[in-house]
Length: 268
Image (cartoon, rainbow, N blue to C red; front, side):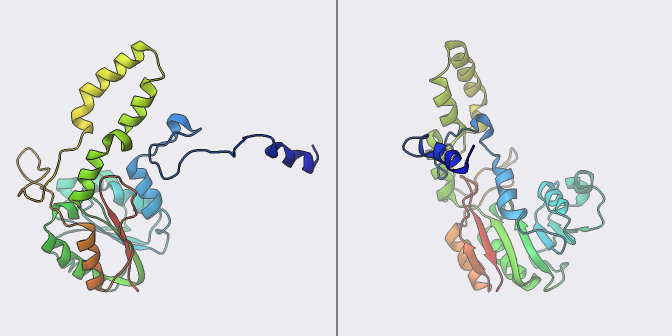
């Protein structure tokens, strides 16, 4: 096919212009069908870790737990990962999950000073699902300590608790969750599938729905024993603390997660 004939085919198809879908709509349908939806955790990896971690990266993670994010950071062949947690590695089973990797060092936090981390040594910081469990004054102390540990031109990603965003996510569940996808599919399929869908939604709704949070309550989202409460800090307060510590805020919330903010910052 000659070049002009090849290109002419595109002027005769897709009347009105080809439209794959709305990139700003997290639940938009596309030609990828059921393969067109990412886990939020995978999206965070693609946005926050993959572009920033390489062989020369010295990383710090606060609150690794069992090591899900630590393992990902190490898989990028970083030079060094410092993992700081309130619990011991024996309690979290960190080494069992991550593996005995010499490039990783695990410290148990004694306070919020990060005293085990060498000053001016970190060029990548990451923390997810941790600062939401700390009181605002504790978050600010960690940020002040972090400023001493990070090098010039370093970058970081910090997930915090913002009860406003959290509740807005819950309020918009019909449009921003898989419920919207399933509701749309239900309209297009036959009755037995509708019945299976309805039964599945009923059985798993308690696991899918969010519990509402409030700044007027002392404890939010606690576990069965009343521990691990969430504390509202808010994007605005987090950004203010970062700026006060000498960081630049690149993006107050990269909006990779519908429920929780992740702030991208760097040290000049």
